[in-house]
Image (cartoon, rainbow, N blue to C red):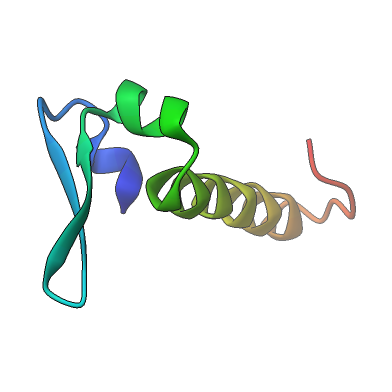
Length: 60
């Protein structure tokens, strides 16, 4: 889960064996690249799953 690496000093995003993004969580979120998209999609998915498990039909 991406939420577990938020506090890391350095995050490397590797695709096809090559580093495509490098930085800490704040830097990578600011770049709005692939890490940003992955992290945002996970957050949306987690919110949807929580809402569904609580019987809500709308996201918070």
